[in-house]
Length: 303
Length: 291
Image (cartoon, rainbow over all chains, first blue to last red):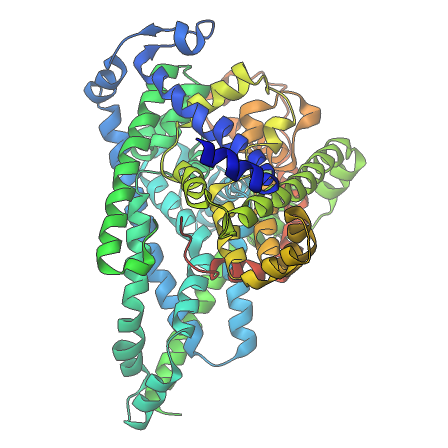
């Protein structure tokens, strides 16, 4: 203990500088961790943290037996897989073309255009969806001009999967392209020059030089993303689907379920249980993924 | 040019142009939508290029702009306060954790990093904020949550690690205090890192609607994006079965008005982002985030 006090006296200013940050994380991150106890209670607002009735694993049992947990887990994972796989493949493709085609102005403009969605709020994504798919939205206007019958998107569940995947990838395209472009810039020009002298054309150079050298970055980014596969993009789903119950079967993810437990159904115990399930298995996933990355490329591991 | 290059470039230009247009299109649709005459939308619906152009929606908004002006004030105030305060706390913490002679730097780094790996979840956090901290309907509920993030602190720490130790050491020999070293020497050397994190913070505050949705009841306290969300949501109802229950004299907010509101709310971002884009690129390539 005396070591701590000596250190405190010696570096008192440094301690004072970091104390606000420590207090912040204790209050807003660590104290809520105590609150996972709600998952094991039938919550009452007056009772609060320790005055609510303890029910053991009842909430978890209900989540499993009702099939809710399976459905939201499946949706969360499948959507994230679509975002990760389609997203990364598109980003790599764009980055390769952007790095190879001539025309500085074209590249700059295209990259800026692709980066715009990253800066827009998800509320605006909601506005796009309204503008495109509502009963007098752009799609229905086009259908009417082609003398086709109108399509009521709000009565059909099928198209929403694709709409969500589209906007999810749309939002992350620019930032992903930037990351892959940075990786491509790190590839030494000498490889390409040597291959050119040997008579390799651009397709051959991309196939035998750029792509193989991008594989580590690609795998790393995929692995990192897989570590977070249980974390859903709440804002994206909520702004597109909202509280439209008809669509939940195919669009409900863990994060939207937790949010509705809080804001719509007031089912604190159940919502906390679903959140704890997500945090717990998410934690195990990240640690596992980090272990794997450490085995492959130690310098890229997270911790 | 060899044949393969011509083919490659053609595919490249077509694909990149297609995707770039796709990225811009939704925004352009809102833009043209906001300049369309209301009557045309009621008659034909939204179009990509309207037949009748109109400034009516913007005129209507600027005839009684109180609400949007108020929301702008809230958002600008929050963004400025949040960025300044957030940068101050983040950079101080980052500096302390980057000091090699600070004994507990690894333990504290992990203490902060762990919050990225595991969290109590939305609901315990919400109950803490409302029941135990009493932040319902308070600006603090909008200001505090984005203020510090483990990601930013560690990014800052890694950035400051790249500043040579000799600067701190020689200043100490000259008798400078730790805070003075941070304030006078380290901060000026950290501008690229500060710019990056400042922009992350600014974007977070500017685009937030979720916190307002959870905590804010009073209309005067709505930030911009939440005001837009409410404006849009009041119309989305009309497209669902709930619309049948509305009284016949209920007037929905006009369609073009919503689009114009979306443009006004987003405005500054669209003009500013091409200039700040490179800082994001720099920040992202600062290196892997490590604990």
